[in-house]
Length: 173
Image: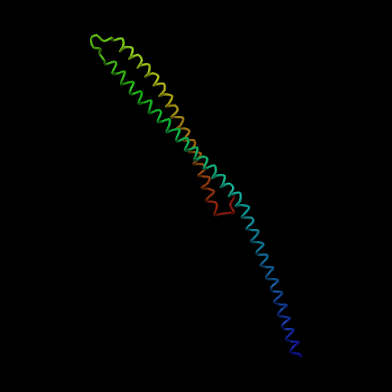
């Protein structure tokens, strides 16, 4: 009987010791999990604003790319219109040279040639003014494209910086 009591005591002792260790181990595990959960929460609090900023930057980047494309098309259009005017100018200059070099045949009216020369000269002046306007438009379009491209470059730089900081969730940004 003594052996039974001794065996019961040993079993109860083992159970109590095991129970005590399990509680301590469970408590320690829970504490570790709680600490880890708090760290994840902090990381999430830092990451969410960064992700929102990245989304905003991406949207602004897309909008700016459209603005650069539009400015580029405007510049191409301005250059094309300027080239058209320059072709007309060359044609008018050639016509004036032809009229100035033209000597009427006997029996032809030189007044008609003189009138044609005056019209061609007036047309040339109008075309020169149009060329100046289109040169101004081209210059403004080039400037606008440079400005839009600079804005795009700044946004790309900001996005690059944000991308570099993704690996370090604790750094501010």
